[in-house]
Image 1 (cartoon, helix red, strand yellow):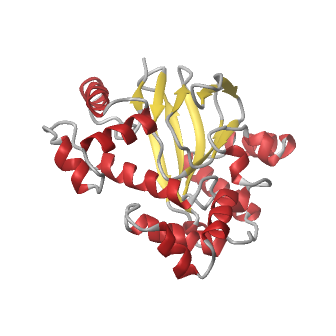
Image 2 (cartoon, rainbow, N blue to C red):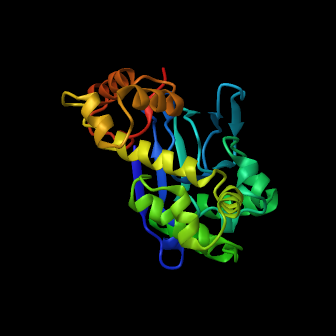
Length: 279
């Protein structure tokens, strides 16, 4: 599987972690993506893929691509035999300048790119990407499109600064202190967060703490769950286990079993590290 990525030039680098090109055969027909403090936009150039956004949402097909705001729980992706796409991993606040609606409307409910940017524009963009001369030219073309679509967004500076503080502390910050430091009420801050990220500051902080904790786990080594939970600032191991199930639907021990399966069956794969096999 080929994965090519790069960080875009300013000012997009303040909104985007990376833009990427992905092509090849998925290691599994279905992959579970635990929540990260990030948003995602995919332009699909191959056969449709499928997403199930939650237990109360039916699986849906996405032919042109999808837009996903910062999630609060795991999503299930179903890949075709061969997949090909160009995408963006946004910082939590980074998607807002490209959306025509409040991010809260999309929370945990992926939509097609057509629903966000319109059918004619997406059809034209997909054609240009599909005929570009290789991955690097595709990423350049896509970056130019993002730069063209970048819009001024009310409240972005406030949300970006506050989110950056949350990120720098891996979620270990008192939300009340953030609103005081920003000189706004907690209600105003929460409203801006829901508009631009889709979740409240408290929820984003929980996601940052969870993601930072999980990404420190080495599945190839023994794990002291109590020590891990305490070090991450959870009340105790039970609290950590509850958060783990809320975010992933799995217990910590089951998560490690699935991660070890990926390592065993596909050592060194470009997708190893966060997605989990669902089958």
